[in-house]
Length: 271
Image (tube, rainbow, N blue to C red; front, side, top):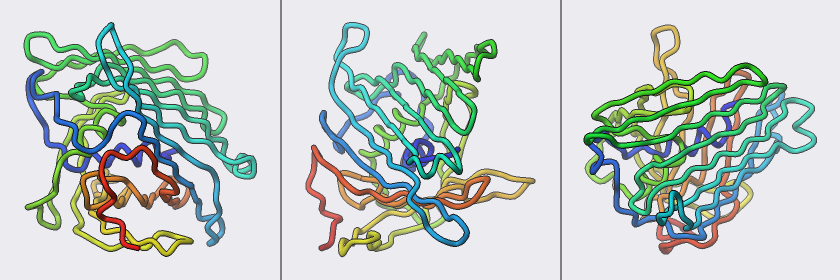
């Protein structure tokens, strides 16, 4: 199931393809250690929007390989009621250096009756970006693959962290951004399209946000299709506050319900 784990990932809207190890790092101005975000997940069931679960994301400073690093978790959980429709138990975790250079990524997902584990290890030989990937489904033998390129590769979490510090100033509606994604199974180019700015009133709330709107697109039978339309706050935090999803089995939405430990004031929040 393409849930919030994929949807938060595509918030990498402002990331361009960058070359060489030095360019795989980025300045962080959007978050700090201790930030925690919470979401409610909804699914359109027989034309009625039903809450089907929750998601949370947390980032803390720790160490990796004996050096200071960020560790970020993204966890999605379906409700007991939703389990009757589709079981969802996903945990994603990534380590990045303090300069946001990707180091390691793992995704453990139990969706429906299938368990998958995806892993990515990063290294940077001779100024290039090299990724080793491991993918395993249920009890099948794992598949190992690798990819080396002059372009930086990012997983869902590390790209999200990096992109949150970028600005969309100067972008025109329809602007397209390509990026290289390593998911533990493949390393492929993806694309997103800028849709412009919009004020969004949060569901079941009087709160309104000034947002930047983007779509994650994929080709299907030769035609592009919007997989996710997502709204991020038009301020220094760049918080994903709403996600509209077109899934294989229907449509779903995710709404931000809580945010604590933020680095910057919520300037895009209109009361």
